[in-house]
Length: 172
Image 1 (spheres, helix red, strand yellow):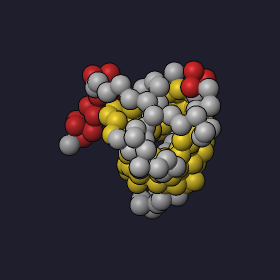
Image 2: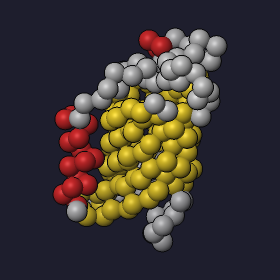
Image 3: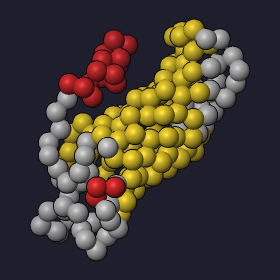
C-alpha cells in the first residue's frame, strides 16, 4: 500500500494526461503554503490530474520545513477534488470562464499526508489527514492567473496538531 501511495503522489503527475479544459488555462501551479499540510510552511507543485464538468482533481507535492529544530524537512502530498461553487449549473458550459466574474471559487475536499525528516535523515515518520477548504482562482487576466487556498486539516493523530493553512499560488 505504501508503494502505491508513493507512486500516486510522486510519479502520477508526470505520467497522467489531463483533458484540455478551461477551469484553469494551465494544468500546473506552484504555491507557497503556511500552516497547511506541512506544519510550518512549504513550497508545492500542484497538478490538475483530471477535469470534470464542475471541477477538477488536483495533486500536490512539495518540500517544507517543520516547526522544531529536530524535525528539519517535510515532504507534503495531497490529492483533492475541487468542486466549482460560484457558477450556475444552467450555463451552457459552466467551466468556460465568465467575463462577469473575476474569480472562480472551489470547495476542496481531499486527503493529505507528510513524511518528514528527523535530525536530518528521512525516516518513516508519516502523518495522514483529511483536507477541507476553499480555493479561489483569480481569472480576470487568465494569462496572469493566481490562486489562494484556505485549508483546514483536522487532527487525527495525537502527535500532529490541527492546522488552518493558507497558500498563495501562481498558475504556470
